[in-house]
Length: 465
Ligand SMILES: C[S@@+](CC[C@H](N)C(=O)[O-])C[C@H]1O[C@@H](n2cnc3c(N)ncnc32)[C@H](O)[C@@H]1O
Figure 1 (spheres, rainbow, N blue to C red):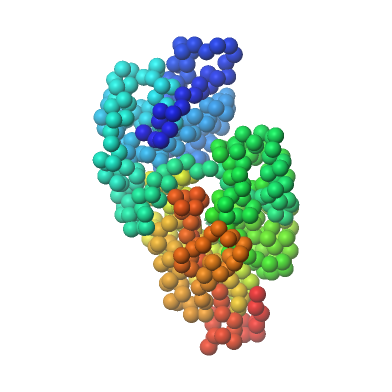
Figure 2: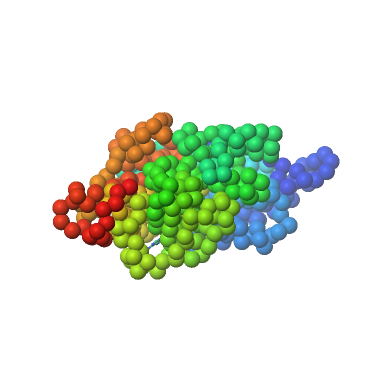
């Protein structure tokens, strides 16, 4: 069972009824809830679409559901995804369909056994009670951590693997970033006092000067501070990346894999909306999602560009020109399992190999855009060395005109609480409370420091950042 298995006994949508509640009206609500979780999970486990897309589509088809109904279904589905391997093992015993048993496990973990007891059969209740007696330490580590074998193989090679796996199976808090182009964190925290945000216990994040951590999952897109562009949702790890790229006013900066613009917005704010910030991506749909966010943020220095691939002619035209290039590479997302637990079930070993090849190609191509003396930052939201350190090491072997900077040196005194053991930024949920996140800062040598011609560097370009 999940950690909250016995702790809560919420009233579900029954809570919306007026007058005193009687147990007799609660039962059908949770019988319906079990069916709802089964319906959604049956769709999710086709592994065709991300779980949050499946849930959003189902909510759109079931508009009459209240926010508590939605939250209960979503929490149970995500709980099943986090614990799926363990739950499947548990579901081998018991009665009824395996889908029914998974739904019961998810709901008893998130709401507590007592909440659903009345709608379960005697056998089902006895089965749940028996499961409570199982010693989780007696399970194999891959079952206990609910990872497929191939992924457990990868994780088990990392430092303190058990602690990392356990932390990645927890729910994540919600991190917000204050848009420093519009306001500052103290002002937002003051505005949160006596507002609906207060119930989510807003706290400054420990490392990022722009971060606020909320306990819970409010619909912040209806908050005025979100609507006016003062706030964005962004994990603290991604915020720290802004300090590593550290773009300055008036510079030319490329966000090579900009997606829906999460990091673009941060870089644009750090540039105080000056200079030129190219937002590249191969996905027009993702870049389109950045548009309203850029509009809200008040930035006017962002130029979105849909590229065909990393070797697009528009990329080549910028050879040697950019002061800063960020490659926030497509990756397995294994550092974000707290938020996207379906990623561990939707990928296979071949995906790691394919992504690693794509990452190497994007990094090589993006590096050509960096001006002499300029900075290239490579990042992923993965914890796998194949996507991280090994990429950077291979890149450095093939690109002697780049050197690796130590992140402590780059961060200087801007992030005094954060000290890394070696050159790389390596964040983990069990150590830092962030998603798993990796970044490396590479600097292109100035022209006079390099002997012989260097690919992508214009003969007459002698700028430095
Ligand atoms: C990790 S996501 C980027 C997230 C984004 N930086 C943010 O902060 O929201 C990786 C992005 O790389 C894009 N991508 C994939 N292949 C690419 C390529 N060859 N060149 C540029 N971008 C690519 C994907 O479409 C995806 O949006």
